[in-house]
Image (cartoon, rainbow, N blue to C red; front, side, top):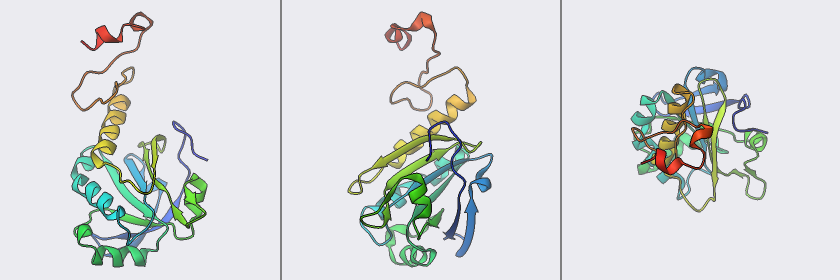
Length: 194
């Protein structure tokens, strides 16, 4: 089982790369030195899922500026991924790989596999350049996630990584004020944020 601020489990997954129109294999090791945003969605040829993939695709360059790779994953096969991308207009021009966890093994290891429907839950994992899990979010299948919020979290995580001793207050966004915790500031955060 995974834990925040601990090494993310090793994985090896087959992917469909729509930019190259090829099947590839990825592992955690491939992302050393980069951020990895690994997001699971329930299934290809569904309704909320293509809207999420489109939203993330629209922010692809913003994630790249943070030295982050996006990888989508579901319990479908690489062949289903290819057919879905070629069929669904919302996925035209998809810039990132879709991983196939078609036996559900990795989803089970992560604790996000729904045994009742045989699909992964809607989960996103943000893994730092050292392979450490820094953020996790799981939402109900009926609602889509917000790529801007995932990006905001990544930027905050990247900021505190580059600026040890700083913390980001709620709703922090790039350029906003941060805090440097100290016993002298305890109970006086209001004054710090003025």
